[in-house]
Picture 1 (cartoon, rainbow, N blue to C red):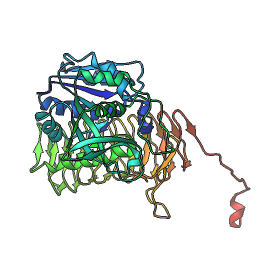
Picture 2 (spheres, helix red, strand yellow):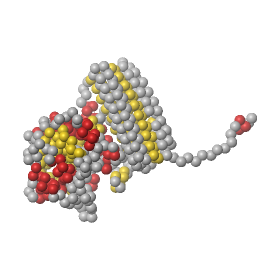
Picture 3 (spheres, rainbow, N blue to C red):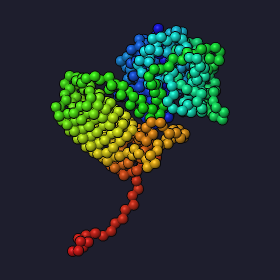
Length: 457
């Protein structure tokens, strides 16, 4: 039985901007639970005895999240030259690296059922893989043949590469291949370059060239590689739907209540001391945290997850598949379309939003985001200078942590706002705004004489 796991979370996560500026991307909340917490809980359920997480950015928050779990060690490294280097820097923290152990990419959301099933039967050199959902030009992907992983390709054009790697079973002998990693990706299409990084897939290819047979075990449920913000949105929709679909009756914790005038077209799980008040309409299944108030005619769609200590009042509306973090406020008719909202976000005084909002962010009265382009098309996103069109949530807006908008700010479809930034009153934002930046509108005005004489006096 596999007893130890090495989780690789040493990357900078720059494609995940603006949310990587203030956190390790493997800690992004999905359905109100950080990604790494999902993973660790699943590993412990599988019987895992020791888990080592290797991180190079924002490691303190990871350590804090697992401070009560003796099974978890968090290794903070100064920097990583790539996933193979992260592997080497974490190897020494395993209790017994000579025995087979599980190596897992920290930014992959794998369903508990797949992790438990994989580890229950895992043998040395088994690989947990999953089908591509986007073109292989977006990923490091792999090719299969007769149940084996036979090749890895770096952002290959064409259809040769069909799957991605979530993790694999290794032992201490694999370190020798990582130590002599060439520092770049070696299997590329002609004319394509690679960053100078130590990719663990290249070390696997070296081992395969020396005769290692990597057994492909394909996940039965979707696996989400959280590389860009819209991938977090996609994973959140899936997890909300999965969690809410498990409800078969209303579940009310101690002190929870539902007003007789509330309409519930599904089932709800309501946390301690939470209240569903007068004329609230819940249009499907929903999960509501502790000490949260829904009142005064607010509307909640289906497959919605709401955190602890929230208030949703005065005809505010959450659309289908929304997640609202802890300590959030919605009021005065504010509307959310499908969105992932992190902790301590205020959405009050009429407005509309579609997308993702980082924690501790405040939207001013009348803040609105565009969701539909005149050409009915999808917004082309810029990711580290590369243009790409997401298959999901291309027209959503993305606002980083600790940011705010002024009165009547407008976000056009697909824009991203950096962390610790401000979109001031009256701005129509049609391009991405960097971290730690305030943008405001210059206004030309005209003054003319006016008075009672204009009315004939």
